[in-house]
Amino acid sequence: MSTATTSARHSTAGDSASAPLRVILRIDAWGTAVFGVVLLACCGLLSGPLGLPTSWSVPFGVAMLGGAAALGLIAGYPSIPARHAVTVVAGNALSCVAMLVLTFSGLIPLTGPGIAFMLVGALVVGIFAGLELRGTRRMIRAGDRAGTA
Image (tube, rainbow, N blue to C red; front, side, top):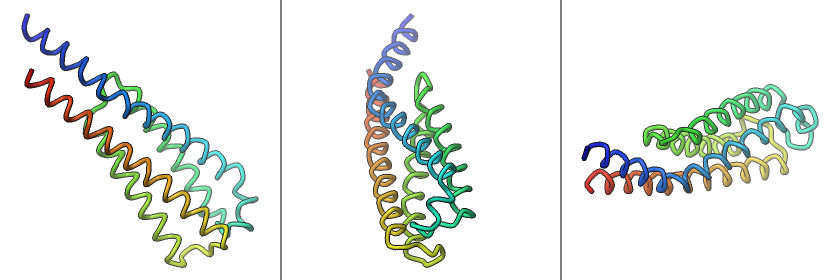
């Protein structure tokens, strides 16, 4: 009987503590999906003004749609596994760094607006990584407190 009570307390505490993380994951999923669709639908139009070749924007768009689906699935779990949340934070942090590297490496022949586009993208992804890290830490701390109650 006490096991069920402890489990119920743990689940409730974890769910309320994961609510902010769940919200930011959903926002991240929708934003990533929209951005992926834009990259795919407008790859020809973006190529000239941004200097982003179609051979880069199509794989980026497809990857973003896959990432958006993963974010949506994770946000939809009844209880968000900490390992998944940490993976999301790491993925966003790596994406931010990758965008900065691509911007300044000269690997992609970006125009001035293309550089601005990539920098804004890196900033947004970095902000999501920070918010998701904060939500993950809060969720893990609440789980630890619920487990000791």
